Image 1 (cartoon, rainbow, N blue to C red):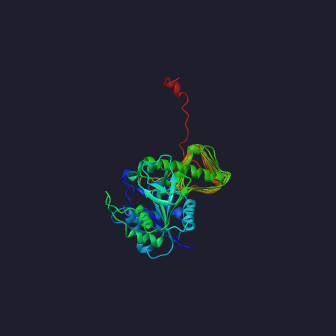
Image 2: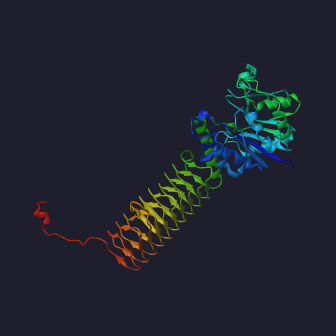
Image 3: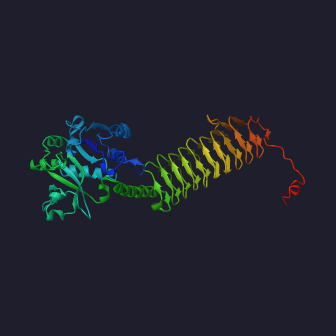
Length: 456
């Protein structure tokens, strides 16, 4: 079987993005563009991937890590010059090499595989991925003979009126016989207005050597989108969002309104889960089966168990168990861990805390830096007072404890197993197991006081 290699062009700065972030690192549905491309290449089982880096090289390498090898293009002298930087890793190998731009996040693994298969079937030395565009203005045109053979690629500015009427365009993705590619790269000239070495010139060089040039037409023009500015970035985001939503729906997830639902590329969702409108799911999030998420919920880098409901709430960098209810209007902040059958009600904030199975914080409370056991009931308006102005301190509430409404637990403090805290208490000392703690001023009634002051 022929070995397959890939070269990803990711050295450009992308000045039209007008950003401090290098172009290929701009995210589409939460994942950098170049990572989309490399992951799709991994999907075809490529034997070796070389990413050409230049501007932001360290950041690109940090993003992709061990998914790719790297070659540095210190000076950006054109696409042919960029590909040539991979010669050390690939130049003496036999096989097929696919060249893909790092700013084309929408190209699919299936399309790359079809391009390579077509390249092999036609015994070509070079194969161009093409598409038919409704408006081909600005794109290079693919000129074929009467039998459909590729004669040449003509840039828009160099095309005749007849050639400009052609709608089949060069997408900028290619497949080459690897040795033929690197031999031809040595012959590319930079005799053009920009003084750069262009990869499409390889096609002309191979054609002049009577090598067979082929083209494979993708039927999805959106795959060919190269992101050069923020407008096109938003277009790519829209297409990717639709793809992601369709994939989840076909795998058994109900999305009430895909147009108002955002799901990151790295999200996993179990079957029979329902996503309601205006739900945003970001990062490496895993949601179990038979959940109801939304409306108006925002979940980031979190794990949600099965049969859990998240209603109009925010969850970040946390773990939520199965058969748990969160919201409405709750905020689960980073490093929180809610076990199974937990209830977090309206206007409850949980921060860096764990709650054991069956525990409840039903409304209007702040639980921060706390370790809460199983089957604990925390009443309305309770606050774990975790910050003394310098340090964050821990509150421990053991299994089966009951904390009455409007209580302040001044950390560090421990409420023992099965203990009770009377409503309205401020607790500054540990409460022993099975005890009742009352920490409030004794009530006094001043009879006749209102009449004396003529208040009624």
